[in-house]
Image (cartoon, rainbow, N blue to C red):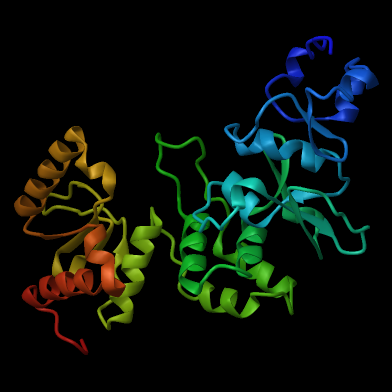
Length: 313
């Protein structure tokens, strides 16, 4: 078989739709060539796509279907929301299609036909995607309540100035509540109603969320989240992940990056700052979160008791 003519640069090393390729002048014969992988009706790729960014991989599956958007787990990944990866999730794309539209049966696509309003779709890198608040509600179908709280915390958190490419939260609590009120009878609604009561602004990671939930469920006071310590001189110091200003106790969750040499130096300086300010630092790591976070709760309880807190106060 003859070596096929090279595809236009725009269609090399990425999946594409037959319609787009034909518009760019690719002949029907070239599109039928065995060198192209068929990813479904109207979708081709010249090489493997597994290592490509999700936005590139999912784009043709959205483009071949009118009035569709990436949703559920696919939307959560595109929106960089915390989620639990499911078996085979890398090979399948979740797509939402308004109820009443024709049924779709395509390989690599899980189609959800349900009520979808125009203001519940945004774009990420040019790909139509359900909004953060709609994605959060859709994920209530499969996530646990705690996972849904962690995702909600991520939706409403205020980005770090200078460290992120956005200045505003993905959405607010009112947006999440609007989804609950709008989609009565939807699958997962009970979990969403339970989760929204415990979503808080200020948590920077799912680990911080799970630590907060464990502390509160153990009967300890609810901590503040990423609130700066103000010294006696009125100067603003660092922001503990969780803190109790009344008892001068700060809690720091230390993820894997805290083993980095530069981070170790910063953590030592932070500990010295705690001591200088007369605060108690409680350092929590992954091992303290085992056994329903009982070791972490015990460390926090000890620090609070030593600072004067008593149950029932």
